Amino acid sequence: MSRVAVVGVGYVGLPTAACLAALGHTVVGCDVDQIKVDKLNAGVSTMHEVGLDDLLHGARADGRLAFICSAPLAVMGAEFTFLCLPTPPCSDGSVDLSHILAVVDEIGPHLMAGSVLITKSTVPIGTSRLLAKRLNRSDVIVVSNPEFLREGAAVEDFLRAERVVVGADSAEASQSVGRLYAGTDAPVISVSPESAEIAKYAANAFLATKLSFVNEISAMCEELGADAGEVFAAVGADSRIGAGFLEPGPGWGGSCLPKDSAALLHAARSVELEPTLLRETIQANEQQFVRIADKVCRAVGGSLPGRILTIWGLTFKAGSDDLRMSPSLKIADLLIAAGASIRAFDPTLDGQAASLGADITLCPDAYSACEGSSAILVLTEWPQFGDLDLHRAATQMVWRAVVDARRVIDPAKAAAAGFTLDRIGSGAAEERGAGVKVAAA
Ligand SMILES: NC(=O)c1ccc[n+]([C@@H]2O[C@H](COP(=O)([O-])OP(=O)(O)OC[C@H]3O[C@@H](n4cnc5c(N)ncnc54)[C@H](O)[C@@H]3O)[C@@H](O)[C@H]2O)c1
Image (cartoon, rainbow, N blue to C red; front, side, top):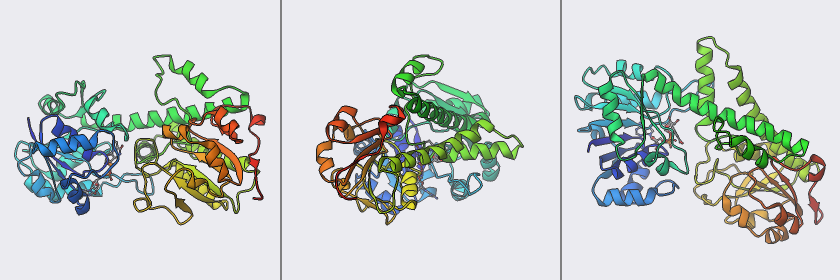
């Protein structure tokens, strides 16, 4: 078992630290955020992630996991140091490496001779070599080990990973990093640092392309009288295509797909290639947000100024409390710009935690979010939304329309409660119509 430091304990770093400790390693997690570190040392998790609390409690009780603020102290004596730091986008789509570079400069002199510095952050192609040069330590090996976990299933994805990708120049370095994952049964794919770095971007760009394609076909289903659920059950049964990532939705978002697609586009253009498919994938996604906003406008009779609208689900996906680049917020912005105001509910957010604009009122439950509202928009695929009492919701509203961009509302229940339902990926256009007006609005 190894001594490991994890620098940056956010959505990637914290599950990484907890899972490595659960595999038996001794882990020190480090973060600049003192409040986060204090909470974690007090046994309070800083994010909503299934299974994480139990791992944190277990590892802390066994003395295999601690958190500190000092990166130099965290890496002292560590055989392996993971960088799980933010790599936000610059305005031109390129990647801001300042967090990574600052930490490498800070920890460089303190890394143990013979240790391995591992980049888990998603970084541009060539970053491993750049870091090795900057570090200027022939006794420290720099390795790329991109992370593929999904928020909302981070623990499961780490402990039952489908693959571990290690980008290194030597087989020995690759094997030593691969051994850290012993116990997960994940196959280790050893490649060059550049291949590891581009593999992460290619995987996310492929997923984004799949989603934009699904949304495009779903729009056709709506207009041509087919059902996207039936269509993609048939399409996904083909093992060359695969059944995952075939659900239509309000557009893709989150902290990774948008920034990583933009970064890959930028990388291609920097070598004078124009990736037309990737470019159109990104463009199609922007259009999807507009399409959903248009559906809402149509559902309430064609006019948004002065309307109150209800959003069920603000996070970018179910199972996570992450609001970064959430499609819900993108669509809310479009509706607000058109004159509407928003009442919203999300199971993981409370009023204090969420920093939302003044035009979005965060409500304590799904029903109070319907007060005075003209339409319910379902924008995150929380399964519990399907169990809500639509009759109760209807009593709060001045107009009864549902736009379900996640296909979680039962059409029969919506009809029984007097709602019109625009369900993404299904229904002939003429059946959707406008919502039902129940009072002067
Ligand atoms: N979120 C995901 O699902 C996911 C999946 C795969 C890869 N990634 C990549 O992993 C990286 C991290 O993403 P994230 O979502 O965990 O980000 P995050 O913002 O949730 O976490 C980053 C953490 O680093 C800390 N930090 C910043 N500067 C620091 C410093 N100088 N020293 C110590 N800590 C510092 C921040 O306080 C924060 O807690 C990014 O490159 C991202 O693209 C993310």
